[in-house]
Length: 240
Length: 375
Image (cartoon, helix red, strand yellow):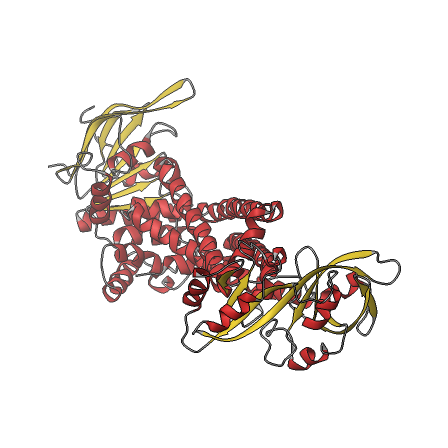
């Protein structure tokens, strides 16, 4: 049973007289407990796909079923609530609030979920320890390295205990070592918490760390590969 | 709950400082405009507001005090017969021509003839009992300190009013007029200076103090019921008539009000632009929170809280600056005045500017493409 499935997604933009199709009838299905990587060149529509799969943006056509719920049947408020309860997000640019310490960044979404301050602090500390930042909790983003910032961002997504975790180019502003730590953390989250982790990236280093790689180009999925334990790409299973 | 709005404001105060300054200067401009409007047009009611009379009786339909005409002494009798009236005092008002030393030319002046007793009602707030007593000297006059230069005569100096020699025996503060110079004299002196000669016909107003508990509006209504050739007003309604007459019946007043409207609009535009710029700087972080499921409504509250803090801080700065400038203006004898409703109205307008700007900034977030924001 897939935890996230999209059918016939179409999306395009009109700029002046020019119509650009970003997604052309794209379908996919993603399983829980795995790190799924959507790989493809820049501008192939990966980020747009992610924002539709997470309910941030409504597609021109097609449907998304997440955790058994049709995302675009309800209104914007219903999708906000769904994301608040079930999803986490990690971005290329970290997008941390400059004024908040690592612990406060992580506690922030819990406040909006109605978790009280004491519980939020306990969960925030535990999550920061999980991503290896136990001794960095009280530092501001300006005092953290790029890799540490991205781990704070991961902790901020993870602290909600989401069933769905989306990551948009999480390693592109990191060096090799930090990129490695981040992608390993994402994979461990998928395996240990049975979370559906969906990561989009054009970074070829990530391919060997994913459980499954979907190749995307020109708004459609061109290839689907399962990765074996030794990091080799298994035979192509199907082409949706 | 993490106090995101306040923490961000404090941490990134440099980014929010221009918005706060814009709010402060909008507030300053609005307050100073209001202070000048009230100061300048309040001067038209200075006879009324700086006196402790509660009921004024004058020529029917008089719109402003300098438009008064002589009324019959019978008015005084009617007032004294009213059960609510304790005391009645005449107030003479003479338009006259001032001739100072050579070189200053002629000036139009308004001569007020007042009761020189220590408990006189007219100008009770601006003249000391000693100053009143000094007016008992024939042809002694008191003028506003700010008018001395215009009159060209120092305290103790002499000049001609309607051809009679008068002497300035002192100065007071707060009796400046709009469109002329107020000269205060005794009732006798005023009569002498009147071109008609001293037959008492130039008494333009009678003012009354009431017995404790008497209602000024009721007394004025009773007097008006049987009035012939005169009319009665409460002090506050007569003052309002005078201010409104100058504000709305003369082009000058409308000009100042028009300028105040322009100031408000310009202030609102500048403030909203700087505030939107400051808030737009955090748009990626807000978009991230939205992606994590925080509703736009909750984000709007964060931004509005920031806008409100900016409004409050800007307002405090604006008020402090205004107080300093008003103090300076008063020191320089510039007519400025602000009452509590005017302060409150300006504060509400300034906070309104800040909050509307914050709401506009949230709209910018909503219309942005999440896929582009979330890089």
